[in-house]
Image (cartoon, rainbow, N blue to C red; front, side, top):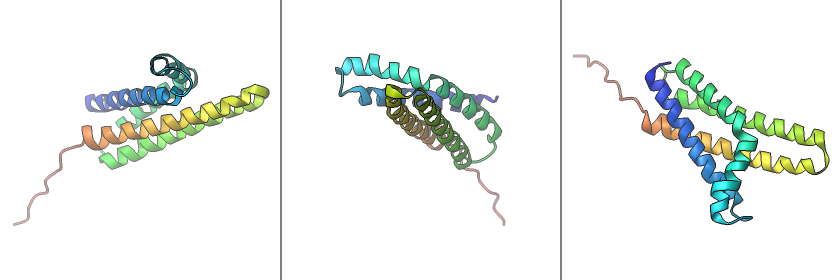
Amino acid sequence: MTGRALRETLVAVGLAVVLLFLGAGVLSLGSVPAQDAFLRQGPAGLAAILAVPVVLWALLVAAATVLVRRRGPVVKLTVNALLSVVVAAFTAAFWTALALAQGGFATLLIGVAVSHSLLFAIAALMSLAVTHLLVFRSAPTLSPRVA
């Protein structure tokens, strides 16, 4: 893995995790005090639902960034955005299938899983856009002039 691709991946994943923690805290604000929402209940919900998908997403983004490193930032953003949406959709589908198989009160998990998956998709897309289009944008190439 090249150094630039590794840095791009680390920045994107780090920013996505920060946005996830903030979003989970905001989602938990109505039921508990602010310090518990942002430091206890929000991160606990994220860890329970999104721990494995975030790690999988980070590995997929790293591999995709290496594979398309010679392409433009829009191609990198498009590939990684598609991966993010697919991981979020599979996460929601997995937790929905698990909750439906359990039945009863476990079906309440569907709403939580879908909201956390949407939060993940939004955080991932925002972090990828900032990373690929602003932080690690490549310098414009100058074309040779014809005399």
